[in-house]
Every structure is written in structure tokens, then in C-alpha cells.
Length: 162
Image 1 (tube, rainbow, N blue to C red):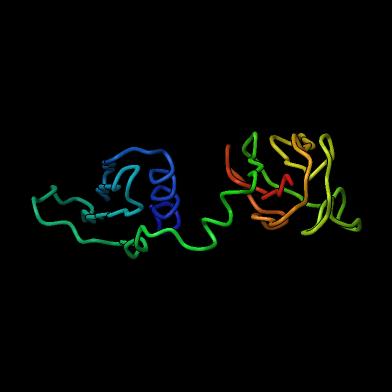
Image 2 (spheres, rainbow, N blue to C red; image 1 turned 90 degrees about the vertical axis):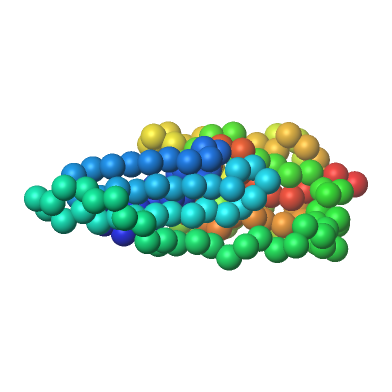
């Protein structure tokens, strides 16, 4: 198991909501502990077991521990964003902001949209799904880059309904 596999596993466990996952193979023993829903902290322990050696009880070495989350005080941006409607991804896939590489983006910040306007395309299993707006308003913020992977229920756009 290489470092990229371990990083992907850490991301998957953090998003899954599990509080602890243990994985043991012939040569590696991994324990991933997350702080739960109220904390965004993940602790990962990796123990390398040499080939042909029996596992020995020893303390595991921490591999990655992200910085502690910022204080829980609401920022001006968070308070300001609360008045906006968040348009979220209905599916997992790759988000495209343009209908084709040589075409302009569907929507820009500051653009007024109405219900039913196409905001982006999400490719899932070789199918291109147009994501339409369910609200009318003005695009305040685009939260995802073009050609980037998105998860189910991930915020994509902020819309000012007024």
C-alpha cells in the first residue's frame, strides 16, 4: 500500500462519518480515528510489518494529523453567506462549468438566473447530467472549479434570492 492509497483512505474515512477504522494486511496495519461530526480532526497510525516477521505489539507512529480547526466564532463571511441559498450537487461525479471546452461557462458570478437555467454539467459514469437551478436570483459565489470531482450534497453555488 503506497502513500497515495493511504491518503485516499484517510479522505474516504473522514467523509464517511466513521469514528474509527482499522485495516490490517500482511505488511501494513493502519488505524484511522476521526473526531466525529463536531470535530474535523483525523489521526492516522501506520505500522509497517516487515515481510516474514510476526506482528509485534508496539506503539504506532502518527502519519498525518491536520491542524486543529479554527475557533468556533462565526466570521462575517459565514454570517453573510447565511442569507444566500446554497445549490448543492445532486450526484457524485466530475463538474464541468462549460458545455464544451471551447464554449463559455454556463453562469458567472453576478449573473442573474431563473428557475430551470442550466448551471453546470456533472459527468457520472459517462453520462452528462445538466444541473438546473431550482431557484431564481443572482450568482454570488462559485464554490467549485471547472473539471473537478464533486460529492453528493457538496455546495456548488451561492445564490442571492432577492
